[in-house]
Length: 462
Image 1 (cartoon, rainbow, N blue to C red):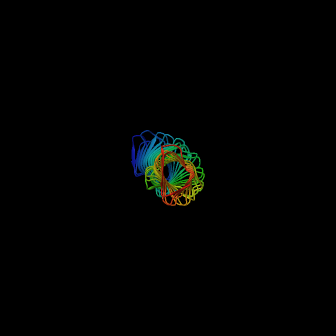
Image 2 (cartoon, rainbow, N blue to C red; image 1 turned 90 degrees about the horizontal axis):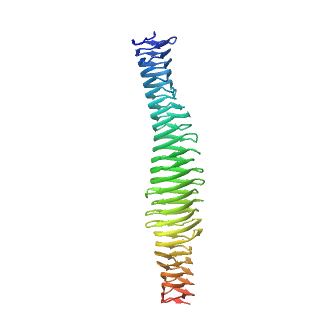
Image 3 (cartoon, rainbow, N blue to C red; image 1 turned 60 degrees about the vertical axis):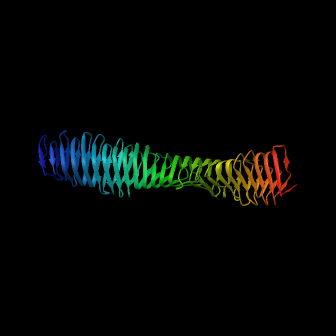
């Protein structure tokens, strides 16, 4: 094949393996086994097949190229479009541009320090470096994208078998994960606007993601994940990992020992949250939450439909139980500073310790031989079952129902009912009403003023 001068055109040519050809005009349907250099503003190649040679696009445009081997480089000032790589090596250098690139095979690799738009990689590796930019990329079937030092991707889809390594990227945004894997590494720059439909996102130690939306798939967090919204899928916060600003509409999240979570909201009964030794601050739930091991929650709000239970161990501090919410103390290590504002607290014998409880409305149930100390009742009910103990309860309003034993209750309002089989000892009445029913017992009762009313309705008082 001869050199192609400016303003001339050639057709159906072959650059043999021993030839070096300069194209400054137009070449159509060219087979490249040797070396072809495009180096002129008007240089143009179309329907090129690279079988084993080299195309250096220094200036000009190359369109609809098929690579079965060899190399093609697009330098500053050159533009390539419609490239399909079945084998060989491609590179877009700084200042170069490429559009509509498809890589089909693992021996077809592509390095980007320039600009590429609409890139598809299957069973091949794409490497970004420096100021390389990709706008719209799809990875699938063993397609891999890596960053060596810098590089930016906007709008990337990772399908089954595809893998994105953030490496030393500058920025990655608009990621759609639907079957493949995304590995977020500490050395990477910003990663934002990730949507997980299927597949797995790994957030490595020291790495950070912001704004992930999950409708399926898996997220494993060893680093930091901010502002995640779940409508499905599973999230596992591992030791050393941290999540914040998380919203769960559906799906499952698990905070393991050594992990931390802040400002978490679980909205739906379909959203489940397990704290298996991890540390959580400011959690609001309308759904199921389970604590286990050394799990710790500070600032818990249990809203309508929310149920919090302890499997084995766990600590709660600063808890608000709203209307429709339920807290089962189970096998908790400790529960303290509980405010009942319409919901239900079930105090069980297996509980380690129970601190201050204030009832504004709603109900406290003391079950199965459990002990409740220093409850303050402004409204609602405290129900002390048979074989259970309430000690140091203060009533300003509401009701205390005693089927077990109540020690040292102080009444400044409200009502106390000592039921059949119940015992009240050391009750002081400044205001309010107390009733000792048939079969009940009361000892050491003091009524301080006329506003304290006391009915002995068949019971025994000493």
